[in-house]
Length: 264
Image: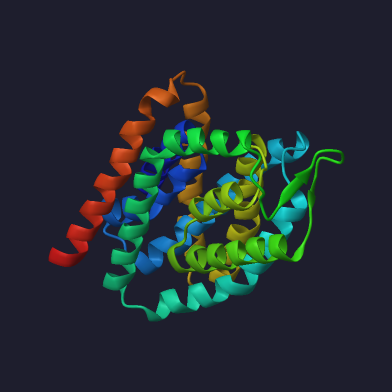
């Protein structure tokens, strides 16, 4: 059953991208009636495997802003143990309500994605100043205190929620890089994925060290997700036509998770 659920998550991941892993926790809860505190480490392990897989190609194509990625990842690793500890102390019902709110927010933001892209294009047209500006001559970020603070804060928030909920944190990193920099979207997503690969691997090692991750279950789940990603790549689907449906699906799952937590 773990492999089957992993397969479904992998198919979603392969079709829609890294954001599909946010469904790992609710699918494990609904599909196996798994305790959230057992599902979160398994989800984190799956995020690590999928993000590492996705990052290799981007690194080879030099699409990752590695200095920005390393700074974000550094502060994420400093803060993520707090998120993990807080997640273990927090009762499971409030933890799941928080997760459902995050899931709802991700779905809502995905619905607004096209509007966001248009507004970003308009911002770039008027050449607004960002804390992290790309130097057009060197094609590198012009580093300053404001840029470093912005990316450090992004890393801290990412680390906390990643450790707390077992998610990658792309829903924080991508909007932050759009807000704080004029990095192109072709570089933002690979940079975000590289950060997720680092922090998810780090968090997974903490879960293993503390005995919170059932490694055989994690491996079985990753077998399913990896197979699902491979199969999804063989399917030719117009993803753009399904983006809105996927957003509504995330919102639906968030509501079902909240209802299950409150009433059952």
